[in-house]
Image (cartoon, rainbow, N blue to C red; front, side, top):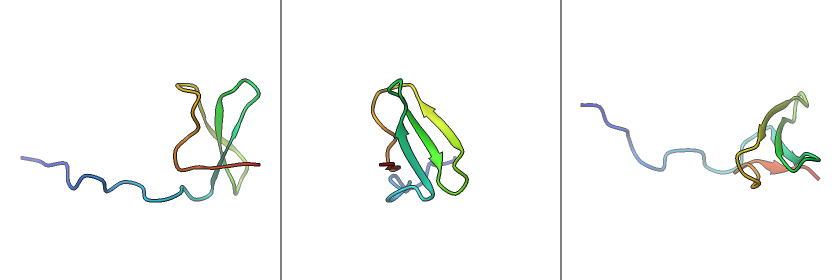
Amino acid sequence: MATNGKPGAGRVGQVRQRSQFQTPNGNWAKRDTTTGRILDQKTSSPEPFKGVRKEK
C-alpha cells in the first residue's frame, strides 16, 4: 500500500525570484523578478501569499 511520506517536507524559507504587490483593487499579485511578468493573482482572501517577498 502506498504512503504519503514524511510530514513537513515542503518549502523551507522564501520563494526565490518572486515578489508580490497589492493591486489597486486590493488583491495580491505575484511577479517573476527576472522577467517582470505577473504570474498569479490571489482573490480567495485578502492576505498576501505565504513565503513571497513584498515589493516596496
